[in-house]
Image (cartoon, rainbow, N blue to C red; front, side, top):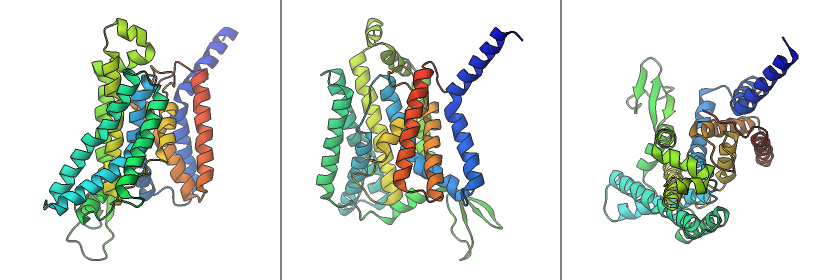
Length: 354
C-alpha cells in the first residue's frame, strides 16, 4: 500500500472517530461502569439513567432547535421550573373549585403547556423583530420566569397535590410479577410481600413521544429545512423567501414548550413545583447538544445526536453518583467534556450525528 493511501486511510479513521466520538464514549463509559462500579449493572440503575435523563432529553431538543438557527436559549431551565410551579398551583386551585382529581390534573397540565409557551414566543419576538441578541433576550427571560415562580410560591415549594399525581408520575408501562409474568399498567391484586419488578416508566415513554415528534419535525418537514437554512445563512434564507422572523418566533416557542413539558413531568414525578428545578440542567442541555454534533455557529445538529449527548451525560453522572463521587466533582467533569466537545467541533466542523 502506497504512503498516500496509508495517509488517506489514517485521515478517514481519524475523521470517523471525530464524527462518532460521542457514541464511542457512551459505549465505553457504560462498559467501564459495569466493570468497576458495584451496583451499576442493574435494572434500577438503567431506569434511573432514563428517568433522570428526561429533562436532558427535552431541554436538549429545545436547545437543538435554537442552536441550529445560530442562537441560544438560556431560559429553558427556569421555564421548566416555572411550569412545574404553575401546573401544581393550577391543579390545586381546580380541585378547590370542585373539579375531580383526574380532570384537574388534565386541565391544569394542558393549561400550563399553553402558558409556558408564552415566554418562548416573547423570546422569539425580542430576537427576531427587535434584534435583541439571543443571549440577552433569553437571559432576561430566565430572570423573569424565575421571579414569577418565586412570587407564586413565596419562597417555598408548590405542593398539596393529589395522590393521583404521584400515581401517574411513578407509573410504569409494565410490571413483572414472579410466577405470573407481565402485567401492564397495574400490579394490583398480588399477595403482600411479592417482589414486583417495575419496567419501563410511563414518563420516559411520554418524553420519548415528544422526542420522536420533534425529531420528525426537524428532519423530515419543510419547517426543519427552514430551520437549518436560517442557521446556515440568514441572508440566504431571506432571499429564498423564508419568513425568518416568524420562523424564529416559532423556534423559540417550541423551545419553551418542550421546557414546559419537562416541567409538568417533574411536577408529576416529584408531586411538587419548584422554581429552580431546572437550574442544574441549563448547562447540561447545551453540553448535550454540542456533544451530539451541533455547531454553536448554527446550521448543524440533529435530535439523534442530542439524544446521544444527553445519554452520555446521564450515564456519566449516574455512574459517578453510584461510585459516590461528590457533586462538585461531577460539575468539573461535565465542564471538561464540554471543552472536549467544542474542540472536536473546531477540528471536525463538518461532523453530524445521524
